[in-house]
Length: 229
Image 1 (cartoon, helix red, strand yellow):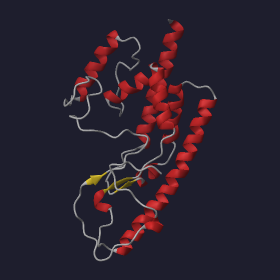
Image 2: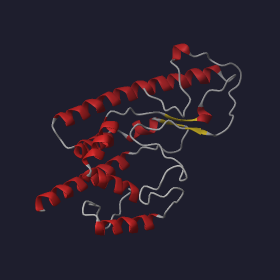
Image 3: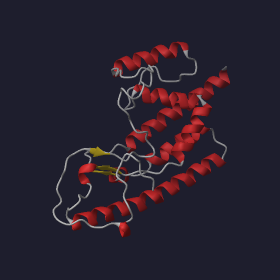
Image 4: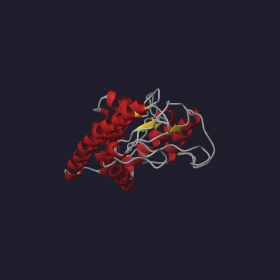
């Protein structure tokens, strides 16, 4: 299982030396391991806005919707609904619209997401401390080993599913939509188990399903536009 370089690397259980003493909490700094099915976020200053391309600017959702609506008036490939009341943000919807209409972009995203492993996100406060409780460290690493085995099994099934969709000759956007539905069909308990030390999971069944539904609608709309052009 791949672990993001920004997080502590977890060695196999056989190579670990249990610490001794007490398990002291040295702080609440987060050391996330982002899921392979979701891109790590960066600070506004480090990443340009998805719609405006401007770094360091955070627009309200209302302004985002206005920009999207304005773009629709001049961009015939943008298939976003005129009014949307779901859980996806305007930048997310804009990205899904691009997937439905940009085959090269859809290919890049489907290949990266279809073959990506699910990663475990761990808050730094949950990591065993040097000189900490050996029993805590043993239980922690056993939990990680079990999770890694589970995510490996799920990732293998997802990759096999992805390969089967590609073999059918489906479009890259359709393959990605089907992978989103695969993720939505996994239990929320599974996604929650990949987050250790966090109140909420950064992956939800509802979000996967909403993304699938929106992308599928965008794909169907793009097909209709081509047939009526």
